[in-house]
Image (tube, rainbow, N blue to C red; front, top):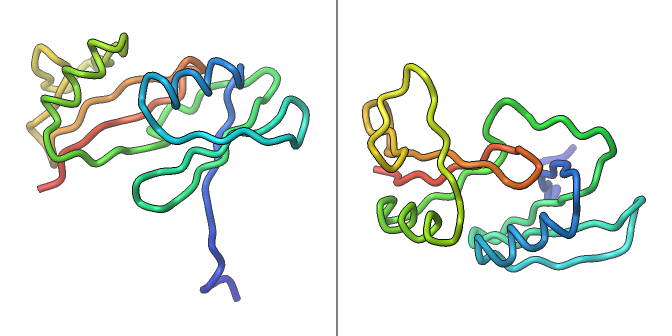
Amino acid sequence: MLTNSKAFSGFAVTDLKKAKEFYGGTLGLRVTEREGGPGGLLTLHLGSGADVLVYPKPNHVAANYTVLNFPVSDIDAVVEELTRRGVTFERYAGFDQDDNGVMRAHGPPIAWFTDPAGNTLAVLQPD
């Protein structure tokens, strides 16, 4: 029934303007804005060809899991550049992370950070 549907994901933020600045400016994604719902909508256009809907939500509570992963070819260079752009990488108790916040012990190297609404994102370097 939905096999050929062009499905997409979405998540909420507290402030659409801050989200647009972060995703478009800080992360460098192509972002389009459109009317719809109370406060408008953003579409993040990812390098994979997929789109992600971002919408404002009153009383938003950030998810306690990663909502968006960005595969990269050189995690150290990306972490360094994002840090230069003001991104702070998260540190989690029990995770063996290096000085830049990259965990390399289990699975691909990965580092987590949050958007202005507190949603968790990650950059990871696939094998």
